[in-house]
Structures are given as structure tokens and as C-alpha cells.
Length: 356
Image (cartoon, rainbow, N blue to C red; front, side, top):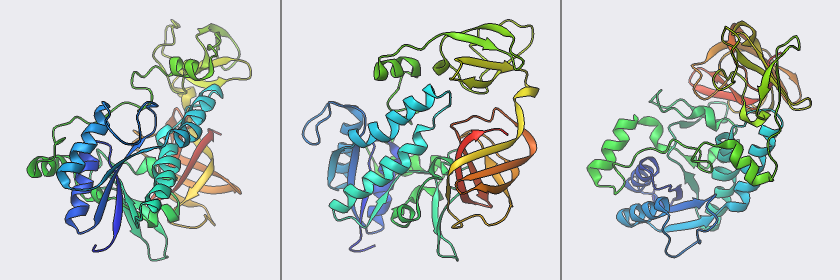
């Protein structure tokens, strides 16, 4: 694409590096941008010992593209960290990657990309973007089911999709790594990151304490009929559907059914009690259509690693949908996303608020 400029979110990993390589090969003017979102001591330019930034610099130098390290700390803290802490304290389970994608990796990066004179931004996500016959843009399933990342992209707006390129949607992960090896990209053998970027040790409660200065308050674990069966360490340590780590010996498996911040209770029950056919969600974003005008049978996922199931979705309010599943689903978790698929395309999605 001669004379078209694209900013690639260059993380220092294999996927974003191959994204930059493919786009340069296609003729785009490629600019690499590494987003400083959490490490508060990284300068916007100059030398740094942070491994990811150094890897990104090496890749940019190897590909012969400009590279910038830009500070997104303020945007990340406001849109992701504050949301993460509040959601856990409200007894829900946050989805920080979904929120980060819309408000930081897209909204904030698009603004900075515009300042650099870019026409598009590009990422190493395993997903596709297509313009439909009705003129709308939609996320489409990637070639690889194993790495498909469409679930985490359901909040992207039409304007964001129109100015985004995702070249890896047509590749398997193994193919991407082979491209990196073949062309000699410096991070070709680097392992994929699995951790949440701002809590690499996975200790959410410690992180929330550091952010708020408030310790989690212990309380009671109860059944649906109010029987006290144990003590919990603080509601931020638990999520709906959790079975392990409850410290209970009731003679049968139990799962977290509900978290009640107003009474500081964790409610547990049987596997049967954890099942429901209904998912209510708000903060709805539609992609393939401007709005949902009538009930529609769709394939839906209620968490990132959920296989998915058939349901009928209908609007029940200005910003609310109800999904009625054909088969009961386990652990419908407030705070997580329900993402709706119409064939290979993301119809839309929302944030789960209830299972009834």
C-alpha cells in the first residue's frame, strides 16, 4: 500500500514483529510503537533495560523501521487499573484485556498514531476485520481456533475497526513463528507471554492492596439458604465458578455461586446450582448490525476459554440484552463478557451483570 502509513503496536514479541514485517513487505510505511502502559520508570526515549522494549528496538532496527516508546501510563491506569480494582471490590470478575483493547491499545494508540501521520494502526491479534455488505465493519474468526482472539475484541467501535489492520488472522501460530525464523527476526524463538502484564505473579489481592491501601476483609461462606459453612479471606480472593481454594470439607464438591459485597458473603453450592440458561448483560456493543431489532439465534461465549453454545439473544433495554441458552451453562460470571457470533463474525457483546 504505497504512501499509506501504519503504526504497529510493537510489543517485542513474535506476533507483533511478524505483523510489522508482513505490512512492510506489502508496501506500507511502517512505524513501530511500543506502548509503555505499566512500568512507571521507562522513559519515552533513550536507553532502557526493560527486556520487552529492548526486543522491540532490535526488531525495528532489523526491519529498518522507525521506533518510538510512548507513555500510556495515565490512560492505562484510568481505564484499566481503576476498573480492575473497582470490579473486584464490587464482587465481580474483571476482564482487563477487553477494556485495554478498546480504550488503550485502540483509542489512545489511534490518537498517537494520528500525531505520527498514520492512516492505520495494526496489531498482532489472531482475528480478521471485514467490511460487510451493509457497510459495517466486523471482527471475523481467525484461521486458528487455538489462538483466536475475537472474544477480547468485541468492544471495538466502527471507527476503530475501519482504521485497523490485523494481518495474522489468516495464519496459524506455527506459520507465524516459521516466518519469523525464516526471515531472521531477532525474537523468532521468544516464548509467548501468558501473564497479565501488570500482575505477572498472579497475586491479584496483593496488587489491589498496593493500589488501595486497604486489606481484604474476611467474612462468611454461606449456602443459598443462608447456612454458614466456613470463612473466607475477603471477596477479592474469589470468583463465580471457583471450586479450589475454598477451604471447605462438606463431603461433596461445591462451587462459588455468588459474591455479595454488601454483606461480605461468598455463596457456595452444588454443580447443579451453578448452572443457568440465562445471561443478562449491559455495556452492549454491536458490530455486524447497528442494533438488534428482533430476537436472534447466535453462538455465544461467556468467557475467553469457553467453547461456546447456542442461545437466543434479545434486547431487554436501551443498553441491555438477555441471552437464553438452549443448554444450561456453568459459572455465568458477572464482570466477564458474553460475546455473540453470527456465523464467523462477531455480532457484538456486552458485560455480564446477572444469570437470571
